[in-house]
Length: 160
Image (cartoon, rainbow, N blue to C red; front, side, top):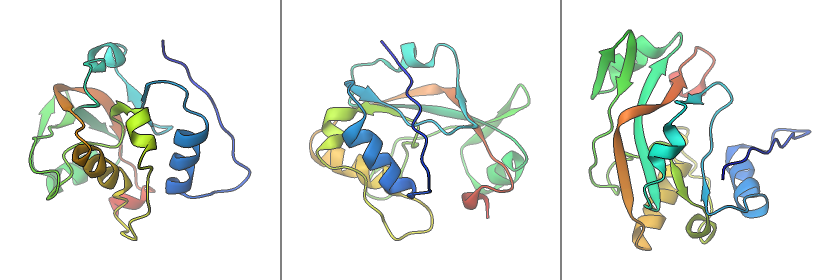
């Protein structure tokens, strides 16, 4: 069973502190996924992502003001039905992050490590978590179809 819980903050505590607080203090389920407020999942996404793996990811459908510009910079994107599809190709997790931050993952395993700030302006806290989980023996399954709709817009820090 899936549930949603809204947590309203009085001030911005930063992405890493927010993720850690939610993961460590609020998640009571076996699996967790962080989803941005302007992104959404296909209606069948969670059913498809229940693979039994510790981390399940998918391709991404990009939309919004900056989707065209972003896809020019990223290899592995195709245009389908007017949307850019960002296809993730499994590689060496130590060299590149091929698992996006809105993947479904094992909450209990993630709680052993937590998120940590990287000091990198590219926000790689999810990549650091995946690497630690893999070192602990985590399994990963990638679904090669877009289940996440991800909005790229001008005000997004990573679009600059």
